[in-house]
Length: 186
Image 1 (cartoon, one colour):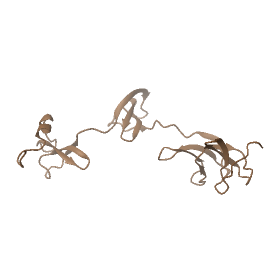
Image 2: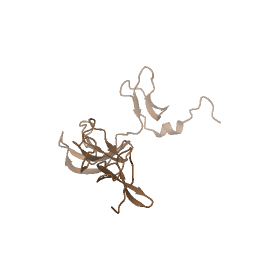
Image 3: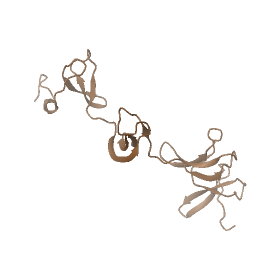
């Protein structure tokens, strides 16, 4: 049984290498916060220095043979908290970042609403694909399914979408007021 004078985590603290605070030269001790353990200065609140136990700046997955456009150091593929990203190997001196995401694909289908833009493939913040007009925000036309060139047989709307059903792929009117399925025999 431990008493109040015995430290609860003495074995873990001795396993750490004793480091001194770079601000006031006191010992760094393990503290526990709402986001987990960290190292903090023993002279808190006079000294407010803290240091995380693990660095979360993204570990290197692969070295790329492409020079950084800002500093000419090689770029690296990193795994970070929010997924994969490409960054400069000279981080933190150089803060160049690029996303490995592909650019939106043009579908070469005219927007049926504004008749000026073209539909492009985009990704929502949840990772789902959708197709929207490239004249956004002037035109807010968007569909969730793959667009197909065609005219609706009921309302005459100038775009159809591919709808995957249990019975197979069917064409449906892209107008939200109509949503009529198209006859494939005609």
